[in-house]
Amino acid sequence: MPPWESLDNAIYAPPITQKTLDYEGELCVVLGRDAEDVSDGEALDYVLGYTAGNDVSARTFQAPELSGYQFSFAKSFDGFAPMGPCIATKVAIPDPQNISFVTRVNGAVRQWSNTSNMIFNGRQVVAHLSQGTPCAKDPSS
Image (cartoon, rainbow, N blue to C red; front, side, top):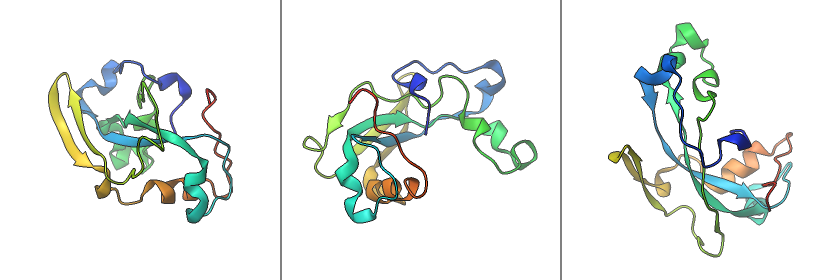
């Protein structure tokens, strides 16, 4: 989960990352209340809404010899993982598993997909991440 400082800011790419940047559009689930040990069946009860995110990676630092098979460094540079700028409520998006989206970089299309292609749906992600670790709600809600 990215730091709140990455919300709705431009992506700054440090020089050591610029040659291997990769971008992935993501559905971000925004919690309306704290969640811990939540089941799949109750996961959406904790959701305030959804926003767009960009899972930015510096692929160079995901190479096994540089990462030790840990991807967090490649995704943790300042400004990576921007989200927002707005939150769509559950009323506005009744089915978060059927949202088409396009990821553009400087106007060029890099990704065109639908949330129906997700390996794990939002309900499963909330339930899984909350097991044994509290997930804090959006501090602005």
